[in-house]
Amino acid sequence: MSRVQREISPTGYYHVTLRGNGRQILFEDDADRRKYLHLMAESVRSAGGRIIVWCLMSNHVHVVIDDPQAKLSDMVHDFAGAYARHFNAKTGHVGSVYQGRFHSVAITSEEQLLQTARYVHDNPVRAGIAAADEYEWNSFGEYVGNSPFAISDVSVLLEMLGGVEGFLEFSRSGAHAVNYLRTGRRISDRDVRKAAKDALGEISPLEIKSMPQEERVEALAKLRAIGLSWRQIEMLTGIGVSSIRRALSKRQE
Image 1 (tube, rainbow, N blue to C red):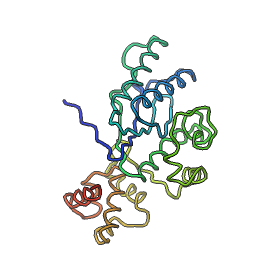
Image 2: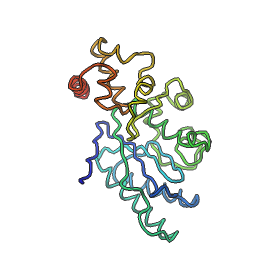
Image 3: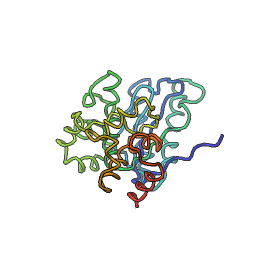
Image 4: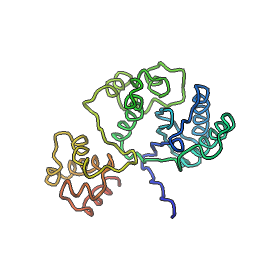
């Protein structure tokens, strides 16, 4: 079976995930984590990219990358491969370090970029390890000037959020939270209505069809941004798939 072609991001931003093979740990100690960050930063910088946010967990890694030169595969293969060689040489492990290809999700809007950044920083929260601002191995500290690392370009999000205070407010406030965002895992039909409510707030999906055009397109874009399929959006809104596709394609022109 041929590989599925990666989706190209119109913004240049991607949410990249790498997982340990068979859920095995990727880091035996802090020296391994520092090695990984060094390799990742060097590879992304050499390829003309920028790291926006990152988080290292025991058996997986999240990183949001700005890739203006369209070299995502090259840069990720470079640092992932270099770290795998380091890990195998250090531990005597034989075989693949990672679970298949790296996963990437194209980020298509500023809203999705913000939600993805919070999702990445909140990984230790969801795992019950620590609060995002107390976890050493993510980029949260870089945003508030309290980190030993300096590998992220924090200017993008800070400008969008109005500085450090705005970043802290957004990060800690559940008021803006979208619990479902595009992580690559399909949202089941069972959960689709809750996902839509998280994305739309008080707006009912059935109201979208009768909205003014600009508001209708924006609402459809929010549903698409969190990862709903065309069929699921049609089911929720009563708007045909072809009409949804046409409206969102015009939005990107």
